[in-house]
Length: 440
Ligand code: CMC
Image 1: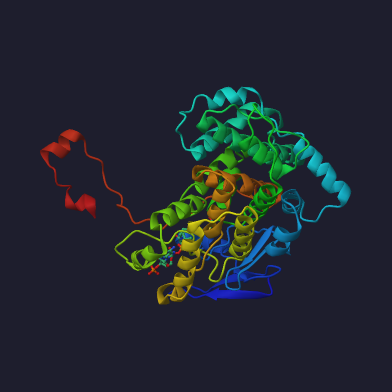
Image 2: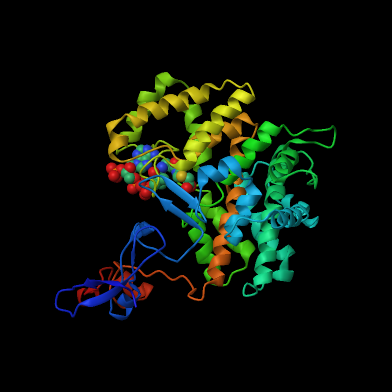
């Protein structure tokens, strides 16, 4: 029995008592499940105040700008852990011992190759296809290649699917890039770590030795960590909803990739860099700030604002520092960084952005780092998808282990036509107006 309850008074009806559930931290949650049986639904477009599940993976306090994975603050993880350690924490809930870490690393490393026939699958796509379009298709197709372990009710099968996805995503992502530039696919190398291997598959060719720059590999690893999970965002909720029907994990992750692609979500990093290029110079910033504030102009400042953060996105703070480090270490002077810094300064002192609590988010700086390390803009969201795959799998796995899991089935506030009789084409031609009594 819940300690506190909420009482809902609806005119002319007996009060409805609703339990209040407590999480370990964060706001209490009114359990509205009993409302349906009482003939009411709740209305919350965009899920602004609706918890669709219970989860122990990630916690966000948007007002204070806090992000914790399994309790660990994101800045501590980004500065002191490596991506695979964070993956382990997300998946298993605790930090690994050295032996557990090494075994995890070994398993992930030894499953990075993809079925050789997947290469032929790529050739069906046009060369100029967007890499995200290819990723959606190829990841969905993995179910056709790895169908030996698709029993979602078996813990072991779910773990195998998790390893396969985590291991193979960098290989597939790099294949998307190589295909788009007409170069041969590069096989993974087991002597490299996760980030190094990705850089190697992206940039080496069979023609000469390629040495991975450690500055680039470190920056890449940090980008992976900062994108690893973000609780119930649009793509994670998509993965959960798709998975709730019992769909196979590869199809669910493909659904997540599709959802991530939109410019309001993971597509913002690409859109942000294109926006900085379009602004071009600090002199043009005021014009774009005015456009962002104009209700009649659809333009938005990409990389600004967040549904949950009403404070600086803690990932953006780490990304901002990483961005400066990378440009300094690689000795790159990028005028886009000057535009970004000035845009940030002006926006943060503008009444519109202050009043609406619009702060830079993770995507504001990630594009500048990715560009500095030679990643083409069209690959930005693919890298986000690759990094987020672990978060998606952790949530998908958590959902299937939850005894309360049921197929996701939101309800609606219906505002369409009431019941009316269908009239044949001939009847409609004879009498175009619908008879009034039928309309009622
Ligand atoms: N530029 C200008 N105005 C903005 C912006 C922006 N970037 N973001 C929000 N607003 C305004 C918006 O017009 C609205 O104004 P009003 O109250 O007058 O109608 C108000 O701020 C609240 O915005 P909202 O759209 O109701 O907020 P939301 O929670 O539905 O949307 C968002 C959040 C991230 C989609 C939105 O801020 C946005 O479109 N930002 C730009 C895209 C972006 O950077 N997305 C990456 C998000 S972080 C990475 C990830 O998790 O995927």
